[in-house]
Amino acid sequence: MTADLVKDVMTAGVVAVRPDSSLVEAAQLMRAQDIGDVLVADGQHVVGVLTDRDITVRAVADGIDPLTVSAGSVCTPDPVIVAPDDPVSAAVALMRAHAVRRLPVVEDGMPVGMVSLGDLAEAQDPDSALADISRAAPDSVRESNGRETL
Image (cartoon, rainbow, N blue to C red):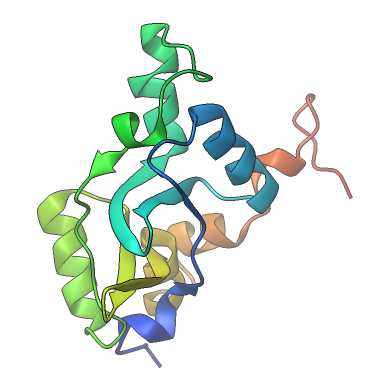
């Protein structure tokens, strides 16, 4: 059986930082929460999505000090969003059209979750390689020699 609505496949809850938060703050939050992205929110309004890749490619790779640059200046602004009652097919179409891997889920103007490619793969094709990867333990639990810790 496949899920029909975004709310059936999304990861509920949101992890967010203020636009003026430093990239170090955002990265520490990502590490603590074991996630690869945070919403950038001004109050309850989503102004962007910040990924670990954004920090690496848009700041660190350019030699920018992650202590002094803000999440708001590095995030992807004005992200494409979906509603919890939108069909999963709409989320898939938006990801495809905008070449994004995750979408904030917003209800009545408030962020309520995220839906990722991995979430969709697990729900739509649980035996796929992407679903397997999405269910695997994150890299943060691997020792420096590449072996997983127990």
